[in-house]
Image (cartoon, each protein chain N blue to C red):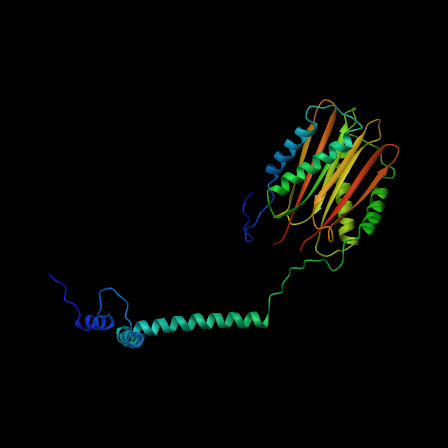
Length: 115
Length: 198
C-alpha cells in the first residue's frame, strides 16, 4: 500500500480500477454458464471483491460499485450514468464483459474525500 | 613557517585548564562563566566594528520591509478572515424518500408511452439519467452533496437481469434511492447515489 501524503492532489485512475474489476469478474464467472440460482451470489461477490481491491490501494476516495448481469437471449441492454461532482478529482470507469451465455456490466464511481 | 600563536587566547585556555593533566575539563564553574562572558563581549564589539554602514543599512531595510509586509498581511487576514469551509456533517441530510418521489415522477412522465427501440434507447437512457440528475439537484437542493445517477434500460422479454451495488462511504451522511419502472415494452431501473462532500 502506498504512503498517502495529505497535501497531494489525487485523481481517479480509471485504467487501474478497470484492471482490478476485470480480474475480479474473470475469477468469479470466468468459465461458467449463466445460472439463475447463482446469479445473485455472483453479482454480490463481484462488487464486494472489486470494492476490496479498490479500498486496498489506500487512495482517499469513497467508492460505489454497481454490477448488472444479464442472460444472453438476443435482447439488448443499455446503461447510462450522469454525475454532478468535481471533475478534477472524481471519476468513474465502466467494464463490459461477456461470455457465451451472459453479459456483465460493472460501473465504479470514485468520489474524492477531503482530508 | 610556524604559525604565531595568539598569546591572549593561549593564556585564557591555559587558565581554564586544570593543572592536574591535559585535556580535562575545568573544575571551576565560576571561572568558566567569567571566561564565557568575556568571550561574548569580545564578539559583540567585533560585530559593531566589522559591519559597514552600508551593509547594516541594507540589512536593516530588508528586515523592516519583511516585517512590514508580514504585519500588513496579518492585518488583512484579521480584517477579512478566510472562512474555514470544512463541514464534517451535513446541516440537512439527503432524503432518499424525497429523491425517490422525484425520480418516480420524472421516469413515469418520460417513459409512460415509450416503446423499446434498440437504436433510440441508447440516447433515451442517457437522456433519462441527465433528467433525473437535474431534477434531484434543482428541485431538492441539498447543500454539499455530489449526485450520481445510474440507469439500466432494456426490453421486456424472456430474459433475466440481476443488478447489485455496494459502496464504501459515510453511512450517516451518504445514501441512495432507487426506482424501477416497467411497461408492456420496456423496463428501466434508476438508482441515485448522494455522496456528501466535507
